[in-house]
Image (cartoon, rainbow, N blue to C red; front, side):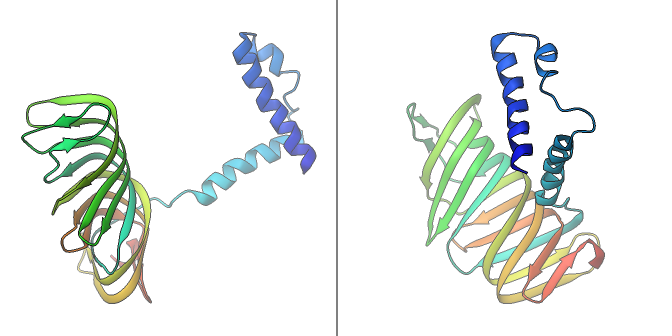
Length: 223
């Protein structure tokens, strides 16, 4: 196994150095690339298998998931747009202030809700207000007093939450599940997430793969 790893590393380095030096990649790399029947090919293909094993499942069940959080949570997400009620300034090397709410585009980071304390930590590809729209990478490290945050078009993510109460409603049928004092696992979700910091509540609207709450579960098969 160690020999295979070393050979794979040398193959990768050959590609990098050929590109950096401006040499012909094909002529330089062909000398070190494995033969078609080389065991290195099996090793390389195993990375693709590992990628599939660790990839999140594709969410398919349309659902509305309401979670009343029982403690503080630090939620990581990637969203196309992030609307934050009451966000009127962005701190940083170039201060930004607005008379209307500031929204973020291409937000990648965390939303921290802790004892009526809300914080945004991450980065955005740009920001917008009623009067302007700016496309410029913007670091975000901001404490904000807000009662509502909307994360739109959130990329496929997994969530593990502690809830004082939760409810799952199918948007395709009549199935619903409610539980209290439970851990909630959403194995995969994409869609919109609403945050209500004052109530310590989150609402997921979109597609899920599976929602587990204690001994209860919800998935596509339940619709």
